[in-house]
Amino acid sequence: MTALEQTPPEETPNVTQMRETIDRQGGEIKGLKGQLRDQAFEAAGLDPSEGIGQLLANAYEGEATKEAVTEFAKSKGVELKVEAPTEAEAAAAAKAAAQKTLVTDGLKRIDSAHDQSKPLVSEPSIDDEIAQADKDGDFKLGISLRNAKQLAREQSGDYVIGQ
Image 1 (tube, rainbow, N blue to C red):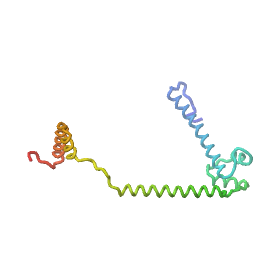
Image 2: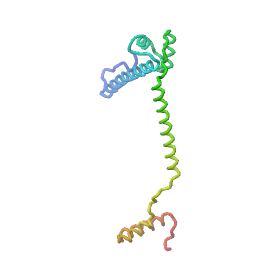
Image 3: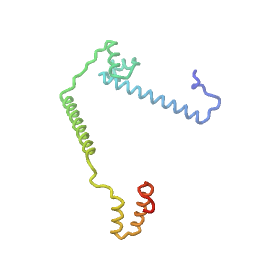
Image 4: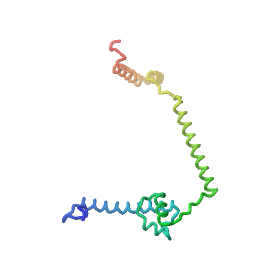
């Protein structure tokens, strides 16, 4: 018996809650592993819910990959029939690949156009904002902008006080 499985005489609510969480997550992991195994069997051409596929799925304990399941089935003497895609499936796959190429090329063109572009509208400079405030008759804003411009110049070192 492991230390985790031993329960002390008095458990705190936190410990009890942690144990319940561990048990619940363990069950979820088992379910997900079962789903992965079933998907691997289906990808290998075996139905894990009936017949020989079910027998093999119950006996299988390896990796949940198509290749591993195929190798396991072959080692047990099961011949898998790999069906070639129908013309419709092949055409659909080719169409999907062509569409993916078109989208990828389009995105590349958009990205390159964006990289080469220059902004059509630039942000107005503080001088433009001051001129607009004066034009609109908003003298308070004009004075505030002039003060902000002066402060910025003083802080950047571009302006010597008294000039």
